[in-house]
Image (cartoon, rainbow, N blue to C red; front, side, top):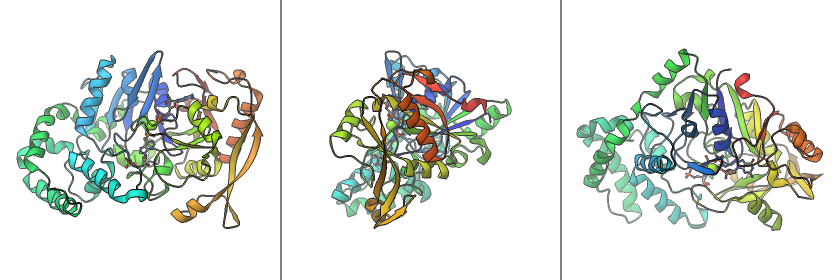
Length: 429
Ligand code: GDP
Ligand code: IMO
Ligand code: MG
């Protein structure tokens, strides 16, 4: 297996960025295949912290970084992010970065609609990142998207704009908003086009070529399986498929290209935005997890909801995504807890079940069944070998493996790149 696919196995923010950065040194290409700049991936290298939303995390190590067609691309956000990263000394050129020319664009009208819908939903809001992700994916499947390749043909855009604006003007009217300002939109597209076109290419073809040369490809998932539009806690999900299977359609490299599927799993659970969360702790324990884990969103700075590790959810995510092994992250955040709880099953209206049901009302009604294990007082922070871990921490990891029915491939013990215990090298498989 020359390739590795990294996906989040919970509700996002599991530490994918750190793990992708760590693996990127051994990869020839890093590819994003779904989502957009709703992602917030944090990399800590020495004294420097990098926050990436749209750029693949491989860009920091200088690894060839590609944005696949499955991503929805906001060209203005891309330019801002590039400016920020370049100011941190990261080199980004047409030689080490490319975007698929068949990527749909996120336009200002998508951001507008995201905001209008969330505001109108009141308490029922999804709690989106407000980046226009959902509306952009809707336009893609509605066959009215403007794509990267259209930027080279702006003079022929009128019929597409007719379709797009007919749809959006009707929606906007429903919210009491004025129609789309077409002249302004065209001017904005004309201004950004040269910047995007410098990086535009058929990414599927680039990947085919590097694959022929024996390249090791690292796929970087965004969000997590529980935010998947089919398999997640619908409707409180994102608008893309976040599972490993999306690698094939979102990059154009075929279903056998995923290789080792590495599920990133936080040693406890967090969620940002609305929706069911069976093990959520709204007490001082949850508060303590949030403070120790610095659980604030990378993209929106929102406070993340925190709770105990939910083995039911992770077992389900691993099965749905065909996870080969997991990278367990943020183990150090559990240092010093006297006892630690693990959710091993649910009770739904008196009946014991071992999976998350599909209906939102059932998902909200399940009650976690916990087992409690003794914590550890020694620190795991910064550990780089199994021998540095307290016996109880090892017991916790082994119990997780058993409950989720999937082996641990690595353990992360701090935000820093090298504070990682390697159990099984995904690229060596
Ligand atoms: P991503 O979206 O999955 O890439 O995760 P985020 O970057 O949004 O959130 C993970 C946060 O945890 C970041 O601030 C990381 O620097 C940090 N982090 C990653 N791994 C560890 C770890 O093992 N221990 C601690 N304490 N922090 C970690
Ligand atoms: P990374 O890649 C955590 C959540 C939002 C909201 C829902 C829908 O950093 O793990 P959207 O803007 O996608 O329409 O919002 O999905 N969400 C994330 N939560 N991490 C992410 O990305 C997320 N991307 C979206 O909070 O609940
Ligand atoms: Mg994140």
